[in-house]
Image 1 (cartoon, rainbow, N blue to C red):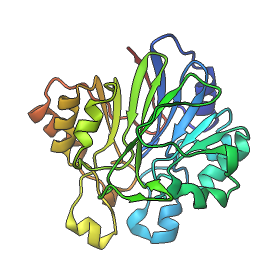
Image 2: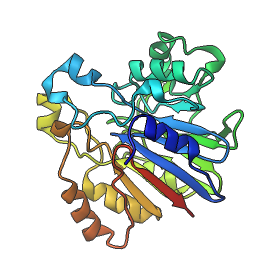
Image 3: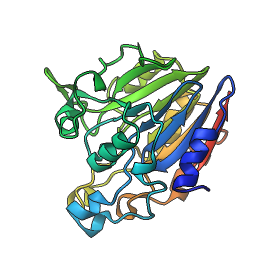
Image 4: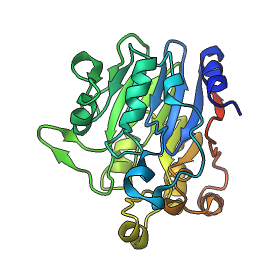
Length: 281
């Protein structure tokens, strides 16, 4: 797999045919997606900032696949919520230097942090939940979907705290769930929207010990993710949020076992940092 300058060269040079998207893993829930008329990133965390601030429980399992200062040519930077492994300010600031025309999409809860790196005004788009928009300058149709990490939090001024994003682009529907558990109304909401061809959901489980010892807020259990993928009819499931921090992860085999038990015909892809997954519908 390419890393560093080789990775950004691959992103720049990969051609996009009709009814396809190119998806690169950046670790945790971080990805880059290229379509026919733009390249975007979602939730990249390309530093060791969590360990630096919160200690050795949060040591990275691997180096970043690319340095953020190399991420040129990025049009949009999507943020699901303000936690450091999703909105990492050093990554965002450095990437903004490399891609000075880049715009951000984020919940209102992120606006204060983004303002610290001069992401304000027209550079920041705060979508309304469940209202489809077209990202300016692209053919990307985007719908922000409220998530729950653990609660579906809402503030009158800031809106929903946790977002997932449904992206309809080049004939493909991609769903990035952000961080979430299954909460009341979640399944019903997803069923009212276009069915994802590819869905990336956080599958690192949750338990009392991680919550109290490391302060981790968990996500979907393997059984929940497998049953959700089957019920939604997703063509491909990408289990995420289970690789960057070993003390906030579960065995990958437990995810495979759940899929074999509840959705044995479900295609899935464990996306490695720096790996290209080229989806053609």
